[in-house]
Every structure is written in C-alpha cells, then in structure tokens.
Length: 268
Image (cartoon, rainbow, N blue to C red; front, side):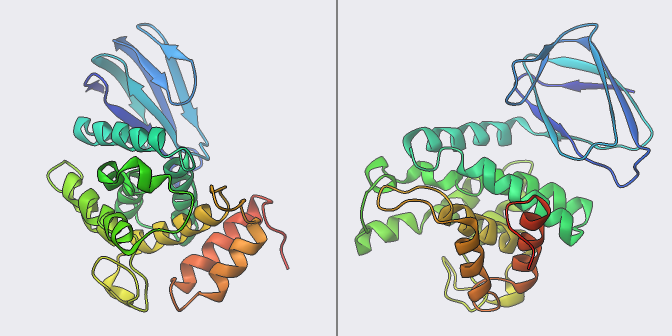
C-alpha cells in the first residue's frame, strides 16, 4: 500500500509480537531521516524491518510517499501538532542544561517498563508519546527557576507544580488528546501526596504511574547543580523503599527487572 506523510511529521516503527513480522519500505517521493543519525533516505531508497527489538523513529523532511509492504502493521504516525510539541520539549532542554536529554531517557525507560508489563498496543502508543511530552509544560517555567542551584522558594515551587496541567492543556486539542490525562498525572503519587490533584491509587493512569517512576529514577541518576548523580543502586533502593507508598509496586518491580536485564543493576 501507499502512505503519504506530511512534511516535518514524525513516525515510528515498533517491535511486533510476531517474530516473523516483516515490513518493506520504498520511497516513491520525498525524503526521510532516521532520528539521531545522519542517514537521509530519498526517492528510490528502501529498507526492510524484521525481528525488531527497539522502536525506530523517523522524520519526513518534506512530503513523502512510501510504498509499504507488510505482514503485520507496526507503523505509527505522530501528528504534526504533536511533533511541534516535541520540538518545544527540546527547547525546554536547551534552557535547562541539567536535563537536556531527560525526556528521551524517560521515554526509553517508560517504553521498556510498559513492554515488560505487557501493555496493550493502545496503551503503549499513548505511553510512547506521553513520555516524550511529559515535561512540555515546563516551557512556561522561567529559566532561572529551572536552573536554580539551590532549593526553591514556596512561590517558585508553585510555579514548577503548574507544568503538568500546563502540559495537559497544550496536548488536549491535538490528535493525541487521550494522553492529556497521563501528562496531567505524572507527578501524582499513589498515597495522594502528589500534584496537581492529589489523586490516589487506581485514580492514576498506568501511563502516569510508569512515567512517574521513570522520571524519579532519571532525576536521581542525573547530575544536578547542587549534587552529583546518585548510583543506579541507590536510586533503585529509594524507589523500592517508597514502593507501595508513593510509587506503584508493580511498576517499580518492572523497572528493576528491566535494569537488571540491561546489566545496569546486578540481580540479587
């Protein structure tokens, strides 16, 4: 079949459940590039995918038409408005020097945790986009607050705490409006101590629970102006200490399993 992708629209190919799944892509018109690589594919170029183990993201440099041959669909478009929001996330990273790659790392961890938990294709799709956009609302936070080397004042903390709701507002009128709740809830905690609404337990979506754990782990293992990064072991112990209190126990266990599988943590 043919598929046309608008200029500057992102799309991704994700691992299918069937190990024999095969896809072939031939570029009839336009150009695409693979995310984080200098490879550009143009008219007449082609590639195939089989036994994929990780997501592959692409961007259409201009309007592109692909000939797509599949035996199992694993192709997803990211709408143009959401792609623009991803660029805003990158802008936040440019002004927040300590967390420039934070959203990408949180997305990577969240996807792996979601896969471990066996999320449905729909929940996985939503998690992929919500995790990269979870901090998009920080575009409204002044740079001096984002990069403050010490503790925040009460007023500054109030400003920071607005970013989940601001981010949800930015996404609610896009193609991915369904993920606005995930973004809105990613700082909620299962005992009701989180923000902005003090939700508890099952009131919090699974996507928000996963992002909340991944976000906290990455924050602890990343350098800050006021401290060096904690070790993965320390961060995991903190999450386990608060498992069932602040964080969903099943999600914490899943993250630990993923980190052990990747060799970041040792199995006990």
